[in-house]
Image (spheres, rainbow, N blue to C red):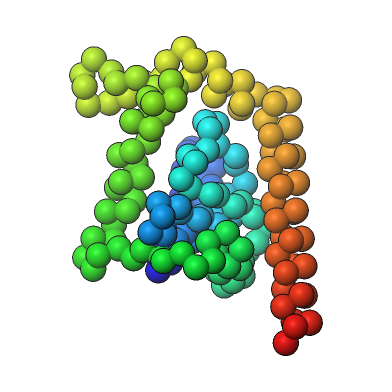
Length: 165
C-alpha cells in the first residue's frame, strides 16, 4: 500500500512544496521517496529510509522510482495499508511522534506544561550547526551524491533485468 501526500510550507517571503510517496512494511521499515530538497536538521529515524530527489517534477516518475526502491530495499516484505477511514492517522502519528523521538536522542525535552516539547541545548546547537554555512552546503552535497549513487544502482539493476528477459 502506497501513501502519497503533498507538503506545503509558507512564509511571507516564500512558498515551498514537495511531493512524497511512502510505504510502510510489516517489519516496521518505512520507505519514503520525495522531492524535498532540504536535508533534515536532526538525525534520521532508523525505521524510515528517506530518498530525496528534488529534480523529479512529475508525480508518476516519483511513483515509478518509489516502486524500484521497494524492489531493492524491501523485496519480499509485506506492505501495510492504513485501515479504511483512518488514512489521516498516519500523518497525525508522524507529527505526534516527532517530540518523543527527539527526546530519546537528546534533542528535545518535554516542556513544563507537559504538552509540548522544547529544544535542549544539545538539540539547539546541533540543529543550528547543521543549518549554517558551510555545514549545510556540505550536507546537501553529500545527500545529492548519495541519491545519484542510488539512481545509478537502480539504473544498472534495470539494465540487468532487461538483459535477462
